[in-house]
Length: 257
Image 1 (cartoon, rainbow, N blue to C red):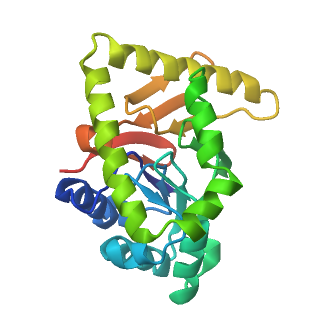
Image 2: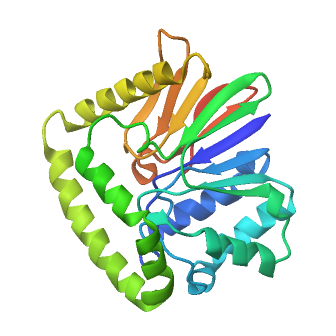
């Protein structure tokens, strides 16, 4: 059993590097050989709502996705905090191309999967994060039914593109300051390890996970807990230049240059 996992590319059509990285992932030999292909959120820097124009705007991505599904690959697309309220968009895409809907899963939160004899938990990662209450308030607002209606019915595609450019630039400036702070990366890495440990303990005794695999933190991690589970995170893909590949329950980071 083979699994390919990517998150946090933050693709912008105007950013050739990010879009090229996504397309290289989708054409990578190990990805094409995988049984499960998992997009763990924040693949796009801002993609919100069911605007059909996204299919043309990111035509290479949707064509590659179609080919994966036609090859009977099981694909999971997780909502991140930059790409969400997309269920109707993907439903339209599947119907338009007469693709097998059972092969594609659109996931709003974390999910448990039993693959072979191992238990996996996959999520964008913000659902298990300890603290960060201001972010959780923000998430509850942007994921609300009201904002879903606004994004789908009131905001046009062109408005969302303009908003995305503004949000992206603001986010870039904020993050640039954070990453310059001494110890920032170390603090975040340790926080998400603690978050994974706490989530694992909360899940007992109903679930005993072998692997907890997340994105969101932008911190690359391959951590084995004394509890016996692994916590994996590919980090910010444009920085790490890797994706996670698991074959027969043996995980590794694959370089994607």
